[in-house]
Amino acid sequence: MRGCSRVRGLSLPSPTHELTFRGQKFSLKRDDLIHPVIGGNKARKLFFLFDYPKHIHTLVSFGSLHSNAMAALSFIAKERGWHFRYYAKLDQKTLAAPQGNLAYALENGMELRNIARLEQEWQIAKNLHSATLYQDGTLFVPEGARCAEAEIGIALLAKEIEEWAKDCKLEAVNIFLPSGTGTTALFLSKALAHTPHRVYTVPCVGDANYLQEQFLALSPDVSSHPTILEPPRKFRFGRLYRELYAIWHELKKNTGVTFDLLYDPVAFLTLLNTDKLSDKPLLYIHQGGLMGNPTMIARYKQKFGRI
Ligand SMILES: *Cc1c(COP(=O)(O)O)cnc(C)c1O
Image (cartoon, rainbow, N blue to C red):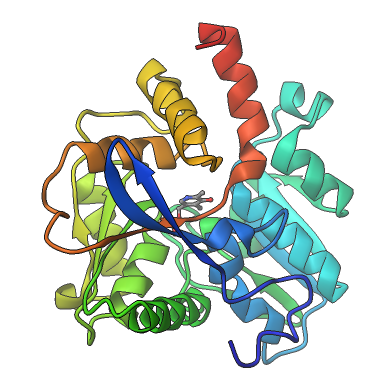
């Protein structure tokens, strides 16, 4: 991809692999391989930071202490020589023995502040805020990088998919990816709206109505929104379910690919329970998130033992 080589450490375009799961062939876009640590959709959504038009000395964000976005922001800040400040609920037990994303972000020099200070210091309603803010060299990025600028990196993903489909002589594909804030699915769908490719997603945080609202907040044009599929049953985000752990293991064993434990298991259960995607070849996007797995695996082992 033109212009990407300047982004140190990111390997683009990401490869696409052919896999079979439970007798169904599908293609897998390996965005998890973009970078050994921050690979996945956070690298895409935060791509704009590598080429930000204004001078930055401090990057600010907020969210959970386990967040993949937090780890990705800490990496980019370190790469660019910026200070990184992150507001979170400062859970002492988690902070006493940092693991996964948190351990990584702290190693990169992340400064933590209590989330209670965010609204005082930035005068924003944290849950509704979905735009970056720039003030004298400090750039604020909303939770999960839910912001308009995320479109820049996701448009590159769309280009890579279009080129891959052309090379494989596939006229139209169904693209499937699980959603949190829905930012990735929405901008991907928007970028591909003029093509025969269609984007489908499943809500993993909140329900279909919540996801619809997220889409509308980012883009009022409903005709370019992704199609939302319902999961086969309700899963609370971050909770442990035996069937999610089981399908994650089965995927790893039968495809050789390690998926994330928060989003991908819900997505694959949804895929196995729908026939809406069977009219075209399927492309699944691996959005990374593997650094969050050790904490999830430890929790699963404690709850269910080995499967
Ligand atoms: C952040 C993340 C998502 C959700 O992405 P959104 O753009 O917020 O919908 C999905 N999968 C993984 C692995 C993630 O890290």
